[in-house]
Image (cartoon, rainbow, N blue to C red; front, side, top):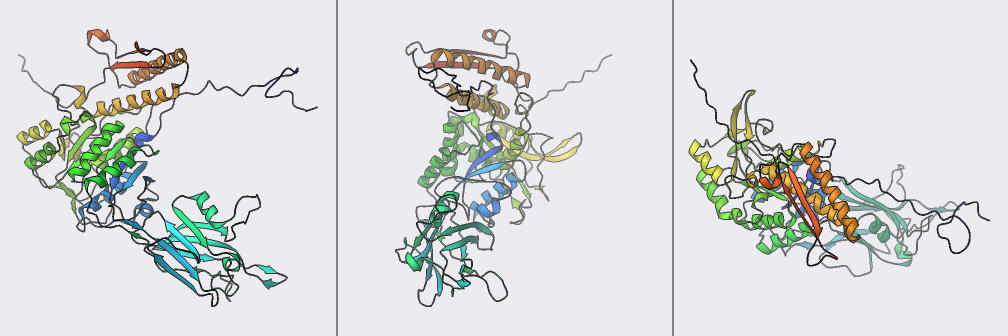
Length: 548
């Protein structure tokens, strides 16, 4: 008899069946996607086959050290990413831009079976055995990588023996370690737990950024006792065999075409990594901006882009009008910023110049979004504009001073200027406006704060909708109604929603309607909701009256 007081499944026999624990305590939680942003950019490092994440701790290792803008205007994106990660953004989801001429090569390690001489080379084509090791680095470093390995001393009866177990390290061109693996060159090797110790299997279990293969078998798949990579030297130091820099990636130029941008957009759209904002990285390419606008529409995420700061007011307006973003079905998700300000490069790579601020605006928003209240809502009803969000750069100088008429033209074109302004606490450079690209005059749709709040509401509703798919119809209806009630009550309590004066709203800030579809009541639910968001003060009219 078992000491267990229960079983998991009972047949006809007597006993106690203990069913699995049922969890009805789960509360829908907000993700931190609104602290991240996505970007398509040129970089000197980073994989090209799919998006990857970078943070402030690894951005220089993963994206490279950056290159100057005067070499290529495409290098401004690197400045944007680094500055954003240092000013509130939690992570950047990067899709690296490349042309179809980009080429990944193989690092090849070969050992002479007689002399044990070790040679390193780069192969343009996939190596054919025999070879000692082949390494394909999908991190795609323009500046190359270094490879080194060693085998520990192995003795039997005090006599040194060949060793099939090695430690393999991959370093960048500055000798910064990227990866270290311990494995065997024997395809049948196992560790103490019965798991494969074969080096290619060990590498594959830790990362998908490296592909390692062994091209030898038998005695050749060992490190000889006379090898420069075996054991220790006379001073007791570990002996390593190390390559010079191996350039295993050819960027293939930066002449991007629409197809390159389109492929990058699809990858950024389909990534499992979450992000709430999209940055243009300061790009002036109409092709790239057009693809990013499409990405914003397809994902319901906000795109914030820069109008070149060296343009005049008229040229800035023309730049935006030529994009024709106002005609987009999701024009409220597209936000333009124009900063006619020269400053020091916040990363120290470039001399003083014009650097876009749209990604910095995103970074400030990401930092704001990390401050959620007891109901889980961030203060998104406070736009990133005005005196509380100054531009934190050094040696800033405004090169253009728009007139009142020019500021009016910018506002009509839905361009948000970044200018010097005076406040009660003194002057500072600030985002002076917060308009979307929606071609409306008196509508909540023209306000960035409303776009920010509505995008999160939509995201939360659709995410929860995914949670109740494939449930019984009545259960799904009940859960959706409860969820929306709690969501909208929280939004109103957090200052996102205010009472509406629309007669159909009956003085409420929100209402919704959830019911089975009239034509397909068995498997389809129609969910509609009406919300009155709080607005943003853009203008104040002051009148003083002299009284007798």
